[in-house]
Image 1: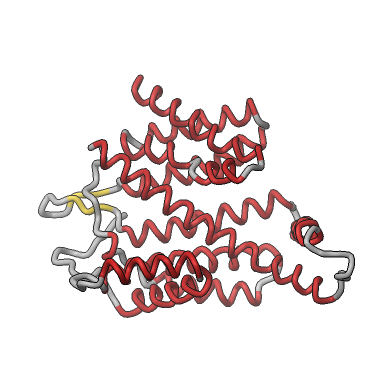
Image 2: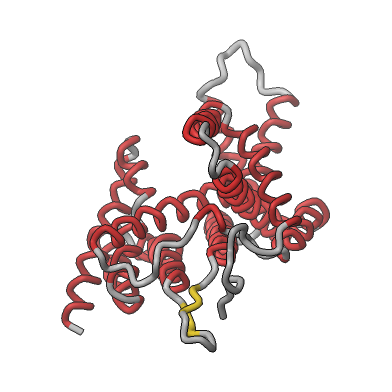
Length: 315
């Protein structure tokens, strides 16, 4: 118990510090805030999920005392608890009839990342405005303030600008949810690598290219697409957030499929390097292509390629 309290408290303090540096409004502070979940993930993966809970509580308390009570709540909801939950799922396993451990499937873990990202986006929107009208007004004011600094006196604020503001406001939930998915994925991967190097990772390292999301994710994406178009107010925003989060998840699935498809190819390093370079230079279009490839992979494959044992399953 003493080890859990000590490690958890230390991880929570580091995580709170990384979260708090965003207040400096510097590029480095913003970058460091993106890895705020990392200490909580390391504590939960390297020791146990109770250590992750202690880290979450300690970090939230520090943020509440030294920043603001609202900062403590934001840290808990957007950083600590999602990290704890994903680490808990990553180490979730059960023994089959032969005594082998069936670990929680990566594809389902990716779905949880998408759901968590959509929930965080919705909570952030409600924090910006309790009513949907307030949310829209506050977000539009913020967008106008940002683009206003880019407008010269010779550029009147006309209907085109109003249309641009409306378009940005409509896509912000999807972009925010996509960003959270990528942030959570990178942090979980970094934490798992760190804990694996230390020799404390209980779960054998999985084959990432063989990851496969459940086919139900396609139905969820279709429903979210319809909901984003026809549902009003926060219901439509929720659907838009889910659609953005699932799009990011499908893009990661497409990236895994690219790794699997190039196995055994002598040009594999060059092909993958070209893919990642394209992702950096033409991120939007490459993400769209990867998301399409990921969705197609889910639609046509019933289980990860190359698996000789039973399909992954989990509670």
